[in-house]
Length: 479
Image (tube, rainbow, N blue to C red; front, side, top):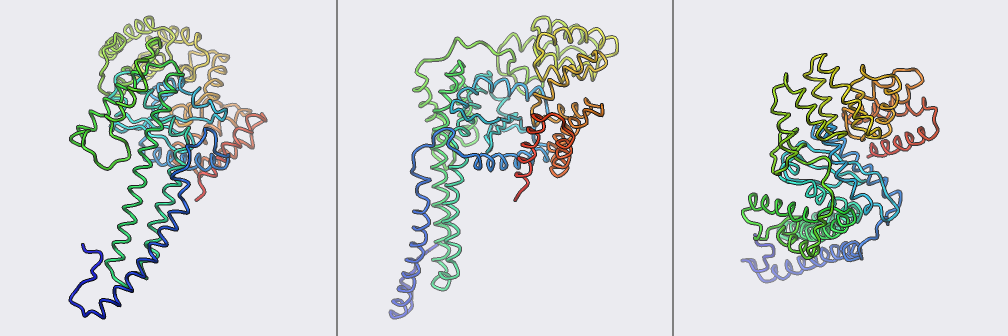
């Protein structure tokens, strides 16, 4: 398409007049676009922000935005409502938290799974991290998952959401300016109008892509430091990014051909990371108690690691249901007091075991559970064995679960809804009901139930936490 057509079959006087009017229009357009750009230049070229630089109002806005998006994912059934996966992600994240909180301004983090087979993880404003099933399926080791998580933590710690919002405001300003001027320029020449709008959009897109690439590189650099500080194998970066490169090659034909995208070329990132790691593999890091392959097997994902723990767990799952009791007992003895195994064993008891199997295994499970009294996943498991618990044990486990429950796990909160039947505990029952409603997307009902919980609470510290949660939910519902 020809944007400017100064030389046509029209007579010279009309050409001169038309050219003058067009040049005047172009001058006005350029003046407005330059003014919009300069007004926001600090957001593009300023120094990197310091950790903890955001004020509390900005944190509240980010948390509200993240909660709205998470509520949408929950309502669409896209989040992984599997306590075992939630526990695995939380445990993988724990060694990275000291670096994230090093600014003395630690905020609550909420990590959740996404039921999608694409290789992806993402950070949402307000400290939310989502991990796709596809990412768990394509990686081999927990250190690789942790490398990706460290990268997403970098986005949060460096305030990238706010910086991207600033960039988008500038880009949006360019496009809005071109659209507002359209009624003027359309009278001069339609080609000017369309060219101006397309040009502004192109500038905006290119600006955002370049900005996003720089943020990805910044997050990579911070992630290396977080992994080092946590004593985690830095080779996890190499494995994760090589997998990413292979997937990118399969999707785009080759990783070496440049094409527009928000992530830098993966091979370039690998080269940079190898230089930063500089042979420091962190080999002294202990192997996690919960290998990735256990989660892969339970989610029906591909297992890619060669590990005896994978083989042992596969043997249990391959046993016929009627004969699985002895296999579970052998596995629990081989890896004692493991919250993940206790939870999965209780799941099997609930769905397939007869009364005799249930009674004999319940003793083994409750005995192992006593060794890890502060685990919320064990507490959830024990509450599912309600009939086998004493009243004292029941009080302990429900208190543990209530105080440590992950915010986005529906199974946990539905269990807690029925764990407080006494009149004096109605406040906690309403609190659990409110969280269940929130997860399923009924936000108005959730707010109403949480208000009721606040009214019924007799403990000042507890009531204060619930009031803070109520304000956060109410802000997230504002438009």
